[in-house]
Image 1 (tube, rainbow, N blue to C red):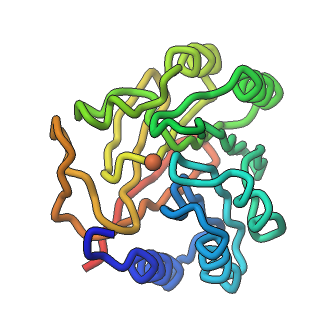
Image 2 (cartoon, rainbow, N blue to C red):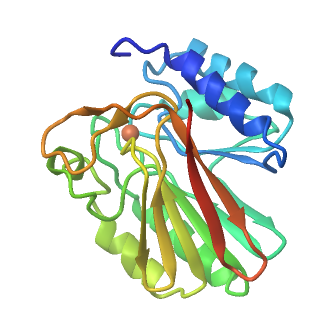
Length: 229
Ligand SMILES: [Fe+2]
């Protein structure tokens, strides 16, 4: 894509993360796992990750084919959507995929699933993952393909103070903001990045990257973005 072999940069990012002195307990893949929506694309994704033998939690993005994802990433270590509970935390994986739209939408059923999960896990700290940004990034072209019903989403979140973090992909850049007690974070792409605060589409010179998350027992989130050399 635009001169980059995205499968190579993806594997380099994963290798860098997994070779850390403290390797991760899990991988969170925040959508647009493939660009071309092919079966072979998801098989490459699966085969590149399964040997690491850590859970891979996946959500679909606008460039994904949810049916193919569900079919090919259908057994451990992969999990598409749903809720993951571990120790003091619950991770809620949301589907914002909207056919024929690069923007995202949470269906009524998905909003209800979120609310049910938050009601059920009031004693847990919550991290929510979704592909599309629920707040403006300050970039006109990107904010035109955001989460279209972000108000519905944020209304539910605001009613559940145990939500500690919301994380998304889609925007190919790092950001870290706050809303009440929740941390709102975007994660860079494993391939090229988009130039922050640009009104029109523009590629940034930053290298492929990823974000560490350390979900602490007290509900705080330690996080750091790493960029490949
Ligand atoms: Fe996307």
